[in-house]
Image 1 (cartoon, rainbow over the protein chains, first blue to last red):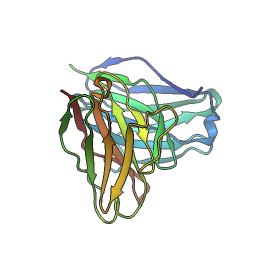
Image 2: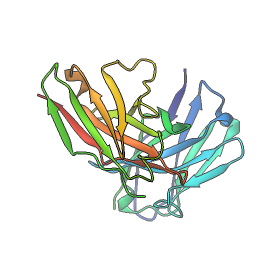
Image 3: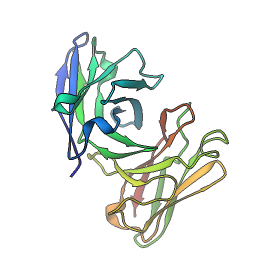
Image 4: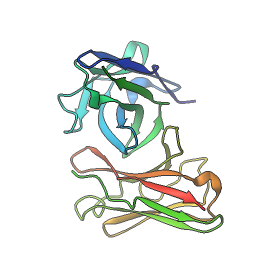
Length: 117
Length: 110
């Protein structure tokens, strides 16, 4: 059974750094892209970017390029989403997704990030 | 690439049919069969309901169907049930190799 299991909720202050994770299981982690989707409170879904763990090829949405870093450690089948300096506007639910061709066939349970002073 | 346009809300009584539209342009929705649909009940993660315009993944009830005409894709829920109450999003994989979501539609079962 394919599963994407994300790390737990985080509460951070503006300016702090953060790295959240997503562990894939039940499939060959290095053979599929894996990525992230943001959902701000009460708002819609926004695609952030994806990475191919097999060779670390990474693609970002223009809206998120330079704002976050997506990485992966294939030795532990885990993808990451990282911020170097959080802002209050980063407060959102973040979902890990597995893209398959033109759609997302599996979703993680979500990680709530709250940034507040 | 702007978000695809969906109606903010649709509603129907149990047993009725509702249709949600997802409008793009001739360069995206109109040119490719790369539209998918996701269901997001309150407080839960989205779930894939339709891929490549009209294909249903295993386990999705056949009450859910997808289609496309010109620059508009549509999701139809036939025989509406209380458990179908959720937010629904369309998504498109564009020619620029990026994914774009629709604005989202809240389905209410009266």
